[in-house]
Length: 101
Image 1 (cartoon, rainbow, N blue to C red):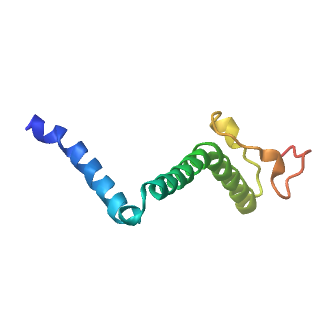
Image 2: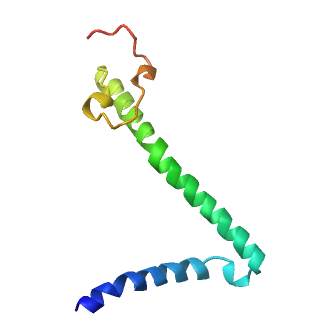
Image 3: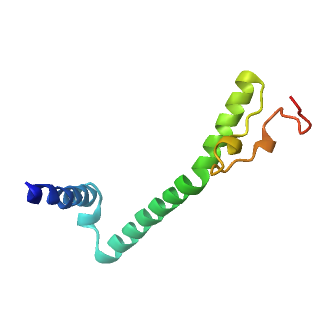
């Protein structure tokens, strides 16, 4: 039973590799073309991962702050609730810097 569980992950990785290999033009490309194709795919993957880790949390927290401001008229700063969130609340449209409410 334990041997069956350990063989599931390599099997799924092999299926994922086969999906990538046969659903792309790799089988008909030359070696140089394959390297360039894989480098382009790797670049797209790395840029997407960088965006997801560094920019997406900021965009989502600012969107939540703006949505809350538009719905309620109250300024909420997500950093006060979640200090790990990266957000700049001073750029909320319509929010004044002297707000004391």
